[in-house]
Length: 145
Image 1 (tube, rainbow, N blue to C red):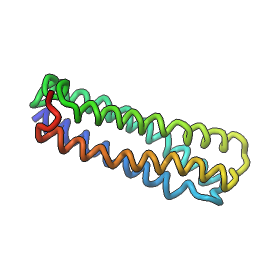
Image 2 (image 1 turned 120 degrees about the vertical axis):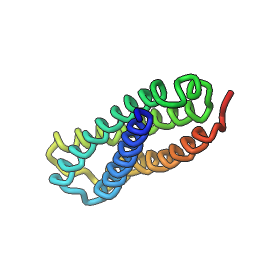
Image 3 (image 1 turned 30 degrees about the horizontal axis):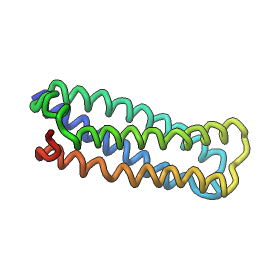
Image 4 (image 1 turned 180 degrees about the vertical axis):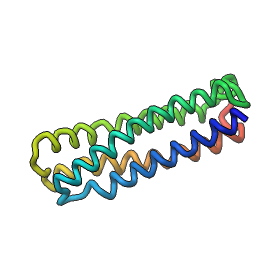
């Protein structure tokens, strides 16, 4: 039963994180105004919180669920998934810093500044797409070493 609960929680959190990433991509556009920057800042805070919960639940799942830590520790796709997730997290830092800077300045960013931030969000989304592929391969036993 614990395996099922952790799997459901993990999947809901990951889908939620993707939804937030998509929302940021839709809201951070040239011509963004200060109220939208405030809204995206709150959304971005939720993004960080969900990412942290995904790590906690994911490692709890790996350690306490049906397959056990040994299965995951020796799987290349598990480590690739962790690596990509961390890379997505690192790519989220520049947009977060930009949002904080824009909010504090009280001045809407230029379209060029927004385009730079959107580029990072696009990279995050592209890499995020690898996560379910790695998870599916891992769940089917591929990548064992």
